Image 1: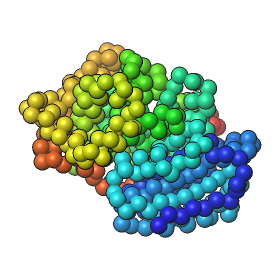
Image 2: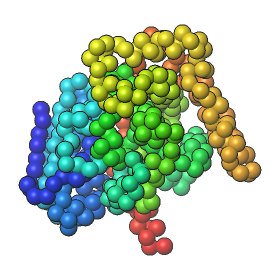
Image 3: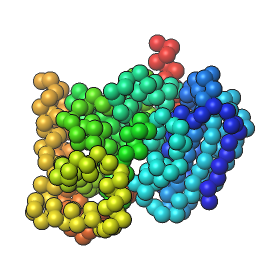
Length: 392
């Protein structure tokens, strides 16, 4: 079932926002509410331009689709800038994040869109200018390919935190210490011209942002890595529920390691061995591979596992990257972050063994189902904090 709702045939669509959702009935309405409160629609209406919002519900077995349809119908009757809006929800029977990503980028998004947004259905946009600021950053910086915001863990908004939560936040601080903009699959804005030359292999599963980063920052492996092609935008942020339970943390790390291993195989090995005439038309090459041999990537994975032999060598720096980040911190920060580094090392060690076993079995389609039951509370807390910061 595909539902299209439009109220205007006015100006062209310049922004296409794709929300990838899998069984998000607890969170999707709040995520959409935070999106419709963004200032981007007023900015576009003033310029006689439009944005489209597409929700791709992939393999959902809950009420995600009817909830989205209801939200769209309500917003397009009441939204003050509804003439700048077009909304569609797609009920895609085949589950798979990458499959939905490809459909959005290559088939469903408007051809006139200059920028494409990829957004999860279980986050809350915090700064009301987030979507507009991401677009403006790319418009004003022709060298940039991707714009990202600040991803904020919900536990950072709490006044009292458990030891697990403190370790989780310390890990985030270390990840942000590298000096370059981080790209998260939860929300990013990418030039349509770049995105439409990317086709995600179905067996990539997680970490599509890692592959996109590698391609965007090297102009599809034609130039040395330039992290500046991904820009972190000021006054743009979203909040998400962090993993703090031991089982959830391990499952998420397993998923990340599987994804990073496949990105390493693709970006650092397979693609660099291809002639440039095959690397440059990346999307075309990936489609050809899938058509000729649907199991081509799994064959590469199995060959990689035979070469590396041990689970801690799935990709370079698997066990050491946390300590490299620790070493970059100033003196006292090293001491404060050491417990987080040690805990993270232990989690990574266990999760990498789990990932190794899954890959040896030929399992790449691993995406644990998580629930964001507290998204409404996150939104209200975020609004309160934003209001307090403005008052100060």
